[in-house]
Amino acid sequence: MNIVVCISSVPDTTSKINFTENGSKFDSSGIQFVINPYDEFGLTKAMMLKEKAGGNVRVITVGDALVEPVMRKALAIGADSAIRINANPTDSYFTANEIAIYLKENPADLIIAGRESIDYNSGAVGGMIAEILNLPFVNACNGLEIDGNSAKLCREIEGGKENLSASLPLVIGGQKGLVEESDLRIPNMRGIMQARSKPLMVIEPSSDENLTSSESFEKPAEKSACKLVEIGNEAELVRLLQEEAKVI
Amino acid sequence: MDFKTNENQKMIADMIQQFGKQNITPFVREWDDTQTFPVEVFKKLGELGLMGVLVPTEYGGSAFSYTEYVTAIEQLSILDPSIGLSMAAHNSLCTGHILQFGNEQQKQKWLPKLATAEWIGAWGLTEHNTGSDAGGMSTTAVKDGDEWVINGAKNFITHAISGDIAVVIVRTGEKGDSHGMTTFVVEKGTPGFTSGKKEDKLGMRASETAELVFDNCRVSEENILGNVGDGFIQAMKVLDGGRISIAALGLGIAKGAYQAALQYSKERHQFGQAISKFQAIAFKLADMATEIEAAELLIYNAADKKNRGERMTLEGAMAKYYSSEVAVKVATDAVQVLGGYGYTKDFPVERFYRDSKLCTIGEGTSEIQKLVISKQIIG
Image (cartoon, rainbow over the protein chains, first blue to last red):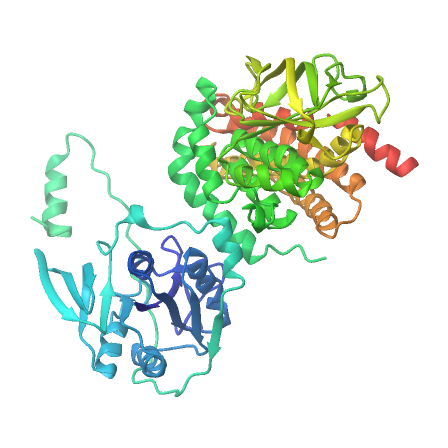
């Protein structure tokens, strides 16, 4: 089976997020980049499917040369090859369109994106790829079994889950459940060494079309200071909850 | 020379931190208290490829250079210096000796098992009465037909009990003759080969140290590494590279202690401010950071020479000497920064303090390093 996993390079979850140039640009200085956690579940699932049924796992991203360490980590974890579309994407459509153009030329049986990337949270790339390629799409996918040409899938819905079936080729937006956290793989020394010699192909983007562009970013307001109420002053606590916090 | 951390080093550091979070950090205190050498963790580190870092891939190793090797030992030692020490002994002494001086058949026989930690390796030079003066060793091997018969004991040997294989240097000629010693590989289970008393140590308590005992132990001629009489010269070369290991171990200890002290000094408030704002503490931290940086540069300089295959006796000894002394000093100061808490086992610095002392003693004391350095510079 031919699998393509879409990888997004995102700030580590413990990063302090800042913006520069009057809130119009993300400040990447001092930020550690990692594989988007939803994508890592997908990559691990892809490795498992390959180990079971054979095939090939490619990882793809749209980004500049700075995202290569994250792609090499994906190779160290076990992907066979990597593709980087050399552009700085500014919206989901651009990313999805570029990946779809690549996939038209180099098709896959299964395309795994994350349900969303943990930086911009738009959660749209997987669905857009499926739309452009006219393929079925299941988002928030937390279970996948493949038997020949057909797939049984599980999707998180409000308050429960939905079981679905579809046929390949197929696009999913993966998340935890596809595999568990304990299944995630630490790249070993051999993997790190091999990652250097696995192909990391750089291709130029086909278009520069963005459908949206961001104007500025805002951070949430700083939390106000904690108010401590002395023991014996419960009436004041009730008043604060009622009048200031307005929760009772 | 470019000392910028390369991408491999970053990935290796990430890998060790990720592995350590689940498999090492929660157990460090217990292993230290109970003097447990965690064999299973050691094997898992082998699966990650950390037990054959320098071994070529055809023998099952990871085929990295000394640069990445330094990072691996340093990062493990930040988590637990005992594990760092065990890793160093396994990689550079036992495995390293076979890699450097074994013939093709011997390498194929032993390296794949060692590089994956399927087998744990020990290395024996020191004896009860001969430490730095290894030339005066009394353990002997006498030829008897196609075999050699070894008698004697090796002391302070890492993995003497849990090890599956030992590389030992023993006397085959006259005392004091630098060509009177030979290296043998002895596998566990060989009749007459046993281990003795386990040492109860000040620090590095999760790294096993014990005695190797040979009582009419018969070993085949095929188990000799290199030629008869080459043992001492080989051992000196192995120790040249080994110094980088202990230097990296010291660097990890210093970094671990420094990070703990830095964090604590920012959190601990006295007289209305964080204690890091007091010059007495701030200057200590400045010294620590500077000395760590200097130690690191000396180590990468020695590693760089080693990677190029150049002679690095001087640079290795300097790195080992300086880094070890820095480890002790930084760990001592870290205890001071943490004050009363630093003296308790609830914080890691007291362990770094105890563990650090090994560095100025093991694989050649600081005094021996100074002897090596002075010989090199005076001629």
